[in-house]
Length: 229
Ligand SMILES: Cc1ncc(CN)c(N)n1
Image (cartoon, helix red, strand yellow):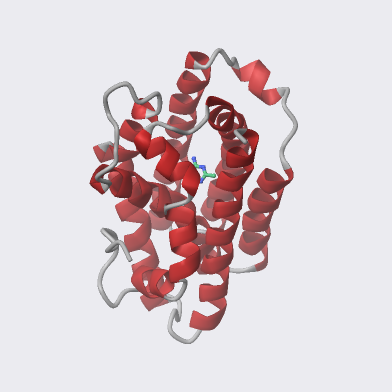
């Protein structure tokens, strides 16, 4: 498996990722991702993804706000505010892509959420509401950390096309120092929470949450992929 560039060896993030190798790979190297890498992804597949991802990010921002609510110290609360702002910045970047594809914010908001979007986002919110901050951060991690790893996998892919690849700017955004720092930070946060919040004793349940989030991410790619068939 691709070596994880995030989190410490022996930390919770590595343990969760290592416990779900097939699901993690099915997410991070989905045919949709491979199509982004070599530029062969059908345009309708990307358009479908783009619209649904905007709707996804709105609910993901709500989940980040829930993490702020669940923060257990003033310092943690500040950290959650930074993380929510980073997501809002990602949403702005996303709107800029939508404009490149001829889609305004109003166009996107007028679209119906796909079942895969509803399933993933509401599941994350449910995990967060039912559990504590560690349960929520584990449910959120495949999203934040996974896209960082996906960008790195694409960069390392021998079949990667940069010249004339319509998805080049998407890849560049997730390869950027800003996004990579975000992904690194999320994995490190999990490692710390694993120590302070009994990660070892709770591992079986946390691993199930992580694997489920990876499965829902892969289903999200598949939803886009199917639109290109
Ligand atoms: C579905 C999904 N997963 C993850 C990301 C990266 N934050 C995203 N934009 N969309």
